[in-house]
Length: 237
Image (cartoon, rainbow, N blue to C red; front, side, top):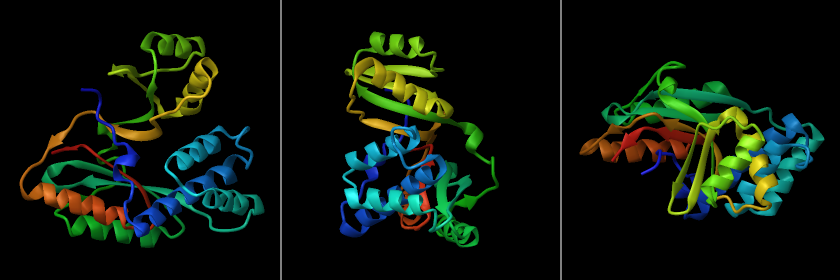
């Protein structure tokens, strides 16, 4: 079994309301990427990667276009990243990434989720040292050819796994664009199964009994918070 990472598609919404939340999350990320690096995806690799992921996750094109148009105008919301860390049910470790235009509201909402699920919000750095901040690229391919392509472009790679023909590349998060482009240069268009930057736990914390239901409740509550973009944890159950 390979390293445990969370595929955002696993929690993709099945209801209309939840899909709207996913669209909103992508809209914010695309808006921020376009505002920071320019609206041309050919010159803004972060934006291009986000647009590709959004299309793959069936985000309507008008949502993507609206976010880019808003960034082009220079007006609109000014979101800032916010990261919260703490301990979930059974002592597992949790990281919550947000984009917010009101930090006081966001931390209040996140704290409520922790307080209602036998969890405890900590300070910055409480648990993040137990995770790798990693770029993850997974696709069907050849391990040897993948390694050769990454080495040729001098990409700093942490690990490459091959599980049933699915190659998963782990690299420092700062190498995401470089690694992705190196693979595209070598193999042309790739249908990535995963192409994200995530916090990957270095180990895991087994939980059982009532803690399992509480953990599910914590994740569900956090996903309902408007400003929450991603939730990472090391719980094993």
